[in-house]
Length: 282
Image (tube, rainbow, N blue to C red; front, side, top):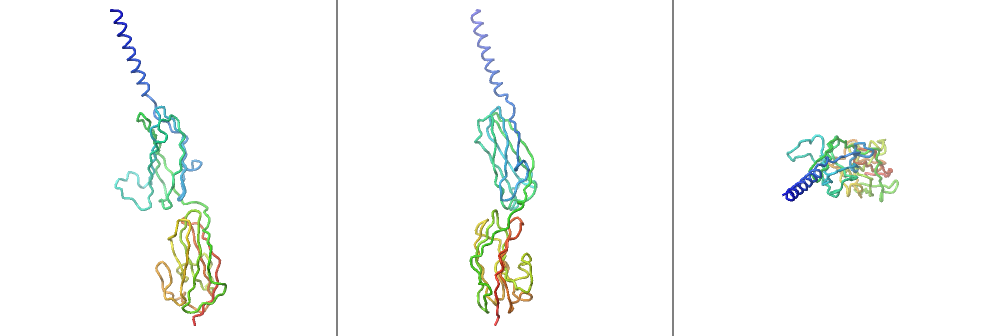
């Protein structure tokens, strides 16, 4: 009898030990996220056309199952219809590469589109462990245009010779490339009458004859161009061709061709040199 009782107590004690051990194993604290950095030096700023630096330390006693990041524009918080403005940027991704780890250094770079809407964004960073426990950090960061970008580089590969004479019906042509380190914006090539005395920055489609005006490029960072206009043409090559009359009407005069371009972020213009020619209408 005593032997049987001893056996029963031993089995009961072992079962209780296993139950307590399993319960202890399941009773891990939720994951801990520390030292979260958004943007370099935790500036909480990202720039269009670049990447967003994200860094965090993670400790999960219950072992990491997955890490989830969600980003959306502040104006889209709680938006459920699925209808978004063309330039609203959203990001959602789940990483499983850290699965099974208790400690992880999270370091990623997320591309911000060139046309991402400017302004404040919500940032949701979640760590889920293998027990289903979730730790989430919600914060905000701002998307801005890049600062201190360089002007586009304009390289002219073919142009009229200095002082070349063009007569009625002859074609004036210029060709070359324009490049930028991040993204090109607008580009304009104007035929300017020298006696207009315009500063290069003031040359535009309203006050000169347009050879080329575009915002469409071979790639975001480079474009090969060729622009031609015939002396005496009634309309120029503006995006919506305009009549060549009034203050910009053809004249017997000295002209020059100017190429100008700026980046997609409203930075400084780049300018070509002036290519001077003479136009004789008769």
